[in-house]
Length: 209
Ligand SMILES: Nc1ncnc2c1ncn2[C@@H]1O[C@H](COP(=O)(O)OP(=O)(O)O)[C@@H](O)[C@H]1O
Ligand SMILES: [Mg+2]
Image (cartoon, rainbow, N blue to C red):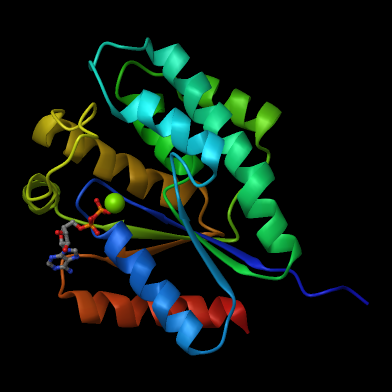
């Protein structure tokens, strides 16, 4: 006999693709069905990791070298995994995480040189856990950028990368979906929120049976 274990779901995609919107909507949808859901995000998701979030998302864009930044993201993820994600999964909850290691593979792995191998090595050493299911919200890069620019905030260290990086990241995420085809599902985010939410709910409900 195996005890029921939770399900670990992540949302990935470029800035402005609708990840946070859809993660929230999915959490509401599953809770309405009576499921026990933990909605969390990266970087952050535990008190220690939220402190690291401020270090990586606020301040001067040149504040950290690419390598130091990878270490900070990995440290935050380790704390999040230990304190929030694994205990929830052990308790049989559904964990919905807004960004996870795939975002580090893309942003820290590709945006300042080719550091993907380093990201993967550290992931293997310190994290060693992939999601059960990853929803890639695929989105036209220009639309994503204009949606993201509509938001205001202090977390702007990465916000001036522009359309070229958005295009590169979109292609990179689609590449990851092929690389990890077993756990990725690609959802077209260029549609109204309700339609996107319905598609995602359908994919997740299949994974939950
Ligand atoms: N399907 C959609 N159509 C139009 N606007 C959307 C849609 N999904 C999200 N938005 C809006 O676009 C902005 C970015 O969405 P958000 O969920 O924050 O994206 P992300 O978390 O991927 O960066 C928000 O203002 C949100 O309300
Ligand atoms: Mg978001």
